[in-house]
Image (cartoon, rainbow, N blue to C red):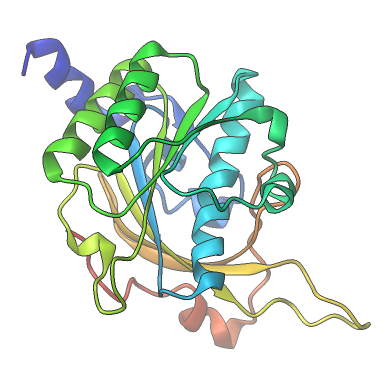
Length: 244
């Protein structure tokens, strides 16, 4: 690895372009008030359930949507599966016109597509879905993202009910677990804004944490609901599990 490559990884955090989420209660827990833009960020569903998988997907989609708006450029969505629900993505701020889809044959080809797209520099962000990614591959993606100043958002799929995807080592800048949470009760019949439990299992330069947030709005932004004082420890506590 050359000197320039090492500098891209080890540059002091203050020199990075930062992607804030918006809510102070969330950004204040992240190093430098947000996530590094030119970096690999991973998320996985807390469980194998479909609702948790959807929450993790939309959590990363919201980040991609905000970058697409900022850069006025499309998001490249790379997946070996063909099961996206476009109306759901649009509710998280990522419309069909903002997404370019790529469908490689397997995870090995997928990682090559992601790296080539990042080095090309065209997308505002790259969203990838994969089950098995080696440490070497995550290092390559982290380096490419740092050099291009483009976020790579990797959704780590479960390979089994008892296998935590974040148990595998990774060079990712942040690693998240996301689960659905009960929405706010309304005074009338209906369903309130979705809520998620987000757990930051690891971040460079900071500590992990967990927090209840309100799901992405039509611009891809999260919100942090007001929490009764007696429930603060329950909803904003420390992370339950570690990540490699």
